[in-house]
Amino acid sequence: MTTVKVVCHRHYEDENEWSCGNWLEYTLVIVLATILLLGSLGLTLFWVINYHGGFAWQEDPKKQFNLHPVLMVAGFITFSGFSILLYRICRCCRRIYVKLLHTIFHALAIPCVALGFLAVLDSHNLANPPIANFYSLHSWIGLVTMGLFAIQFVFGFFSFLILLCCEGATAGFRSAMVPIHASFGLTTFMLAIAACVTGLTEKVMFKLGEDYSHWKEEGIVVNVLGAILIAAGILVSFAVRSPTLKGDARLSVTERL
Amino acid sequence: MTTVKVVCHRHYEDENEWSCGNWLEYTLVIVLATILLLGSLGLTLFWVINYHGGFAWQEDPKKQFNLHPVLMVAGFITFSGFSILLYRICRCCRRIYVKLLHTIFHALAIPCVALGFLAVLDSHNLANPPIANFYSLHSWIGLVTMGLFAIQFVFGFFSFLILLCCEGATAGFRSAMVPIHASFGLTTFMLAIAACVTGLTEKVMFKLGEDYSHWKEEGIVVNVLGAILIAAGILVSFAVRSPTLKGDARLSVTERL
Image (cartoon, rainbow over all chains, first blue to last red; front, side, top):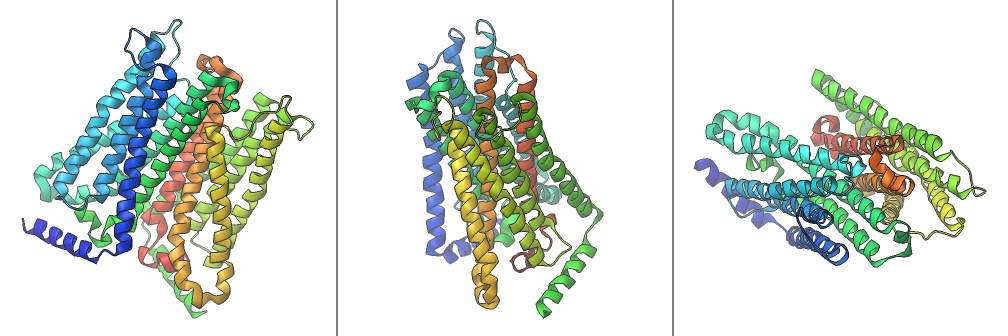
């Protein structure tokens, strides 16, 4: 209990020391992140409903495919993006609650990613004639992203939650693992964005072909969606590395444990 | 002169303190970076020569296009990648020489990018019928990357080389600009990789279309090239942020000025 009290005390000290510029940066990151992370999901929904006829399950493999971009953006971008950000910038709760929220947001991403993956597999396998799987650059990037995400989740869950049962004995190991988990987490997020922009390019080329160069409305919507996803990637990467949002660097390792 | 001597002295101290693991990490980054940065350029050359008939200038716009991927990968990935890495990990020379090398490598990227840009513009405008420009997600990302690259070069040249003429008076400003220049530099590199993977997807979809799903040899070459580019992005990003390769954190701002 004593340790927690000390950490909280230094937290408040930090907050009192924050200048107007720091608060402006903090607020701007939160507002922009909300716009970009929810905006990307909203625009993906608009795209597939307006230009691809909405959703279905196995009875209509073409429409089942439409679940793939929406669920992948929801899981890998919106939920994961908020999860990374709230872990980094949440300044008002005890560390364990922030950790649990981080885990819950990533856990919410799991069914999205699993169903999104199933949707594209089904839409390929149930098509007439069936379409091959895992042949494209997009699918290779996507597979690596899913693999890294799974490893990160399992590793993070055991290292930073389960190992808390022997808090003292595992502190050294956990503190050594924090930067590794953070680096791989950001890498996974960047890979997810690479998977999104290659996937969008692939889909728009399949659908529009040469017409893409005639500035069709759908082409512009897809480009704007890609731009929003990249902007989200830059913002999350900035927020994770910003020394202001990190708080006091001397405290970061123990605080973030 | 006294300052320089002190910095060199502390450099050697750092080097002596390096453990076997640090040297292993350092050597591994250099070897892997060389393989990935040169490998991506080599594979791009192989791809366009083997599957797209090699190069030409305005007399054959289709073959002129082939200069675009090669020159862009040379400028944005190979030269820029080495430039970022050598600035970060060069431990044997005076800071000013490292700065000059960093500038020279980025300067070498300029003609590559300019000619690569001209090649794609010509190949579109001289085609029969002409093809529109800047309609795709790839071209949007590419334009932003070129803009950021230009701003970074001009800003870096004036801030970290020209302003050295009044070394003492500008030290504060320069040291404040280092993290901003570094962040935008890494962002530019990541955007360049996003431009590459979307460009590769676009090109392979135009060329192979539905055949892409039949595991054609060219499709696999393009996928491997994309994977190498992404691996280069992860490696450069890791090298830039690694505390080991950074050396002593307490010295980093002044040392890296």
